[in-house]
Amino acid sequence: MMGYKLGRTYVSMVDVNCYFVYDENGHTVVFDPGAEGQKIYEKLGEKGLKVSGIVLTHGHYDHILGVAALKDRSGCRVYAPEPEEEILTNTGLNLSSEIGRPCTVKADQFLKDGEICDIDGIRFKTLLTPGHTKGSACYYFEEDKMLISGDTLFEGSVGRSDLPTGNMGELINSIRKKLMTLPEDVKVYPGHGNDTTIGDEKKYNPFC
Image (tube, rainbow, N blue to C red; front, side, top):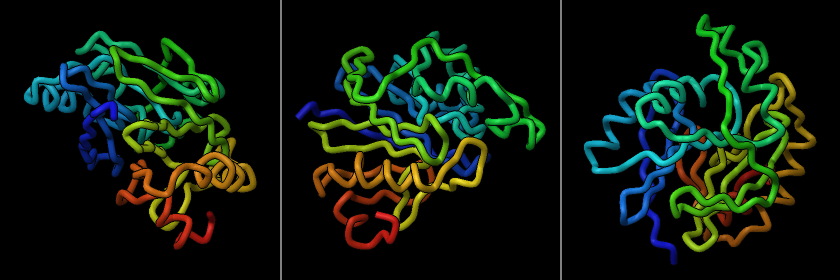
């Protein structure tokens, strides 16, 4: 076991789960800081945690609005799925213009399917899962049996596919071929809603 710990902060402004994974040395990777980047930074600091990187599952505004403030305070790098670059840099595609808060993100490093990413000793595998958006990804911590699923897989449901670059056929294919092949005891941490497991989704999720 790697022995990573996972925490969650609920970002009420955009109704999203922001996760942070950290090790015994306090090195921390933040996933999808949807807003309130300053508050996230302060909360982690109170726990003695140092932000080593920001990782995005996809480019929609409710997962990226907090990136700039968190990066500014921490000085860390931003990582994102390679096919998601266009959405991250287009306020129409990432829907931020629709809420009157146009926002773009320039990633420092793009991640490819199957790539093992190591950020200050926090290691995880990138699983590209197109469907919710063309470049959506999930992040798999194999030894700790954790999956951060973004808006690809939810408890009993899946992400929307009717937004720009979404495709339901691709989404179902991604889930069945990339996620449902993982061990059943893998814990799933979605962008919205409750935690679940691969096993429970196989049993109860009609899309799986």
